[in-house]
Image 1 (tube, rainbow, N blue to C red):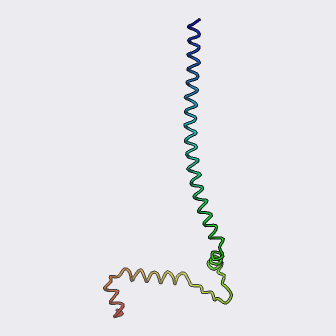
Image 2 (image 1 turned 120 degrees about the vertical axis):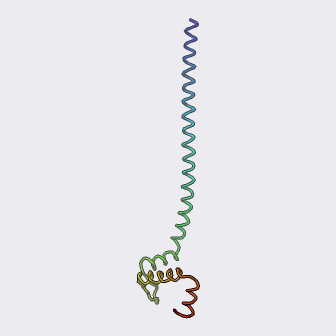
Image 3 (image 1 turned 180 degrees about the horizontal axis):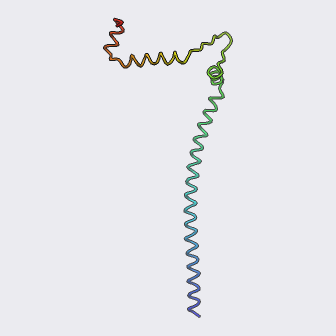
Amino acid sequence: MKRISFIIIIIILAFIIIRLISSIYTLWHKQDLLTNAQLQLMQEQKKQVQLQKEFVKVKSSAFVDEEARNKLLLVKPGENQVLIDQSLLTASSGAKTKKAAEPFWQQWLDLFFNF
């Protein structure tokens, strides 16, 4: 009888130990989930601050005016609209890069003597 009760107690204790180990593992895993959620929360808070700053900028009348001028090609009364062809802009920037590729002494000669 003592032997059977001893075996039953050992089985119960083994079951309790297994359940405790399982609970510890589950809590450890949930701690990792909590840490990941906190990191994600911090990232979202930073994103929210950035979006709030952008919202204040977009809400301003200067931004609305700039967007109307640039994207919708609108002008204020009394102003004239000037459109520049993109090929002219690229041609002028190409000339500057050509000048920059020449040595300095040759640029000076071109400046003073127009060779």
